[in-house]
Amino acid sequence: MPGLAASPDIFENIRLPEDRFRIHLLEWFLPEPGMDLQEYARRMSMQVREANPVLIGVSFGGMLVQEMTRFLETRKVIIISSVKCRREMPRRLLVARYTKLHKLLPTSLVNNVEVLARYAFGESIGKRLKLYERYLGVRDTGYLDWAIDQIVNWTREEPVPGLVHLHGEKDAVFPMGYIGDCISVPGGTHTMILHRHRWLNERLPAIILQDGSSI
Image (cartoon, rainbow, N blue to C red):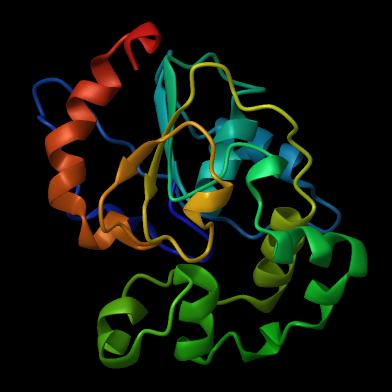
């Protein structure tokens, strides 16, 4: 599951051995009025056809796949550049929850690729504008307002049991200082699914196949 506003193309450089794994890419759909993250997760879970899947989610997608475990029997859950519970949220997001300042964010600028990329990838994209534009799959103001509100108001108190968390040491969106038990990725930023794909390709197969007790 890709991150906020991102398309499944962010996984294009992730290569898992085809004789051992089958990859199914999920993508965001527009939420219905009044839909919360749990109901969205229930609807997304209906798109998972395999029994006992391994769910992998990036950033906001990592939060979503955790909610999907309410509706699916999973073999494992892996999150990348995400958070496991409210305690790992940076203070600015916790403040937004109580002040509602996130309601004032200029999501009407969603068609400005530079602005949208900052929401989706957490950094100024500069010379990589055309590259990042390719990965922005959802440009709907209603979706962006909904997604930001769901992130700010996420209520999970405890991590999903056995969850595996891969996190970049230089993640600016969810700083490492707030993150608990995880596998740290040297030099990894919030966009490491794109820029550290070699590191991920070398390690993901073993991480997927390991028993929870050995991680």
